[in-house]
Length: 180
Image (cartoon, rainbow, N blue to C red; front, top):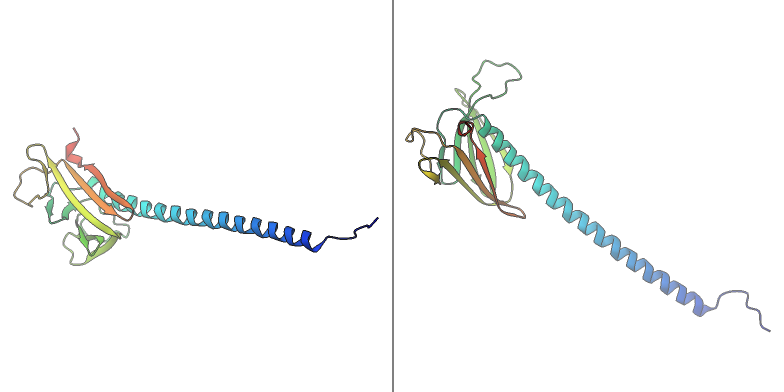
C-alpha cells in the first residue's frame, strides 16, 4: 500500500484554477457594483442641481412684487422683494432678477434697486433647452410678456427645462397674486 503524504501537482493546479475563477467572478461583481454606484451618484447629483435651481427660481417668484414680469427669447425678468440684508446696509429690499440661458448654462443675474452692481450666479449646467411661459386668465399661456404694456400681472410661470439626463422637466409655479 502506497501512503500519500501531500497533494499531487494535478490537485494543486485544479485548486488554483478554481480560486482564480472565483477571484475573477468576484472582481467582475465588484466592478459592476462600483459602476452602478458611480452612475447612481451622477444621476443623484444632476437631480440635486436641478432641484436647487428650481428652488431658487421658486423662492424668487414667491417674493415677486407688483411690478410686471418681462419675458422674451427664453429670458425672464422680474422684480422681487424681501431681499435679505444681514449686514443692515442702507438699501432697498427690492431686486431686479433676470434668468437667461448662455452657452448651455442657466444664469441668475440680480441687481438691487438703485445699485449698479450686478451679481451673476450660475444655477444649472448642461442645459439643452429652456422655455418660459406665463399664464394670464384672459390671455392664457404666452411665450412673451412685454413689460409695462399689460395692465395685469400673470398668475403663473411655467418652466420647461432639459438638462443632463432629464428631458422636458416642466414646473408650473403659481405667483402670489394667483391665490384667492
